[in-house]
Image (cartoon, rainbow, N blue to C red; front, side, top):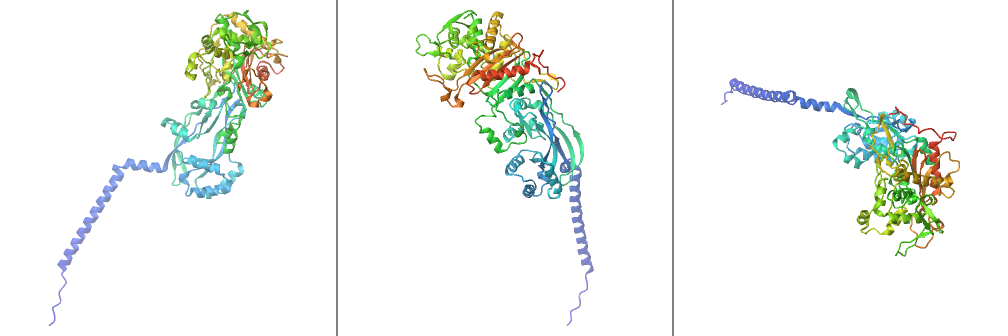
Length: 627
């Protein structure tokens, strides 16, 4: 029998439908609530944070490097300037494939491995996002054109104009003015947060010389600008800007013409010369030869060029004027003679018999004078200085004693840094009892005093110390701190009050007369430079042993290698009646002190004589307003 057909349950279907609608409505309400809550969180609770993050994606802070201060000589001649240069840089954040981009640049510009290695090193240094990293400096016009034509292949690659340091006089001022170079990892790691901020936007810092000593003054203050960028980091507009403050300009006591004359006077010989203005203490010239071109270091020296400079036996990177320590030899004799007069050990008439040697009582060692037969039977201080009589000064040193010699030499700047405004100056050695016991673990012996009386033994001095000693003698005991910089932005650099060594005027006159006789008498050891002088020169020659000569043997240069021969020295000031400048000259392995004396004569003539060979009335003053 057929089952009756069940009719549709409309009530049940309506109930199911209502349940589904309610459920769906609840789900929608919950989802809407979540959406509203999320929207509220984004727009209200965390609005400020997300606005900041958004701005960071489109607004970037760019550092604006300041213009580095200029350096002038005393006459207003530029010694360190900033010249425009077009540099190739890469912004890593805008480059899709860095290695591919570098491959394209290799094809276009023949980028070598040295440049790539330096680029990757810079890329790994601490930097701001979207900060350009230099790959090559000083692009040529054809290189710029190639980059422009292939710009579509090089996203993130920029050619930017930038000022770079340039030294017009090249090697003449390499050791005094110094140079700037790339900030290396060691320097960057030593930066504190304030320094890191100051150097943002710039890649260079002073390495040696005035560039390093006055770095904080020459650098200036960095500026900033907020820029809006698109998704690829390209600048759309500048939102606000704080201009940088340029570095201060320096005007020096150094004179370019005098520096050139002093440098050329060496004629390729190794050595150093320092010239000091006796009136102000300003350093008029500071030469170290051989030298080098500082422009090589500005944008990064090649490994080949650096290796050639660093491995050279002539040490062109070494500043002999400040860092080389030499036995001063007989150049200290006038100062020691003054010490003997001041302490009453001798008077100007005190004389000795010089048989050509000196021997301490009870000592077998015989100290032989450079003149085998001696200087005569009645040698006084004037003759001893003029002819550089060793026997006289052995006797004087023994009679004066170490304590008085040391105390007097310290007053003339020996054994301590001069305070010149260039880094890395060495202090030399002016021995004392305490020094020898501390350095050698030995007591002071009479023979040590004899060596000190001739500027030998443990005595060491830098050329600038000898120039300061000579300037102090010229100023009759007034010792002034030598400075290379005269003004900063037109304001005179403050100078410490000079120290004064009080000695009788008669004693000063005696020493002046004796030093004048070194040049202007027939037997004077520097009489070779007296011919044709338009002014009187007070000087003292000296030689310094490089290798020891055994007892009883004679110095024979033919048996010695060139670099083992004696150094030649000469110190001088002029004019004698009213000193205007003092100088110290050293020629490495020059043997004959006349070589150093001839260089000093050229230096003195350059400064004291006009173009017609006549004595000038006054010292050229520093040009005002150069800063």
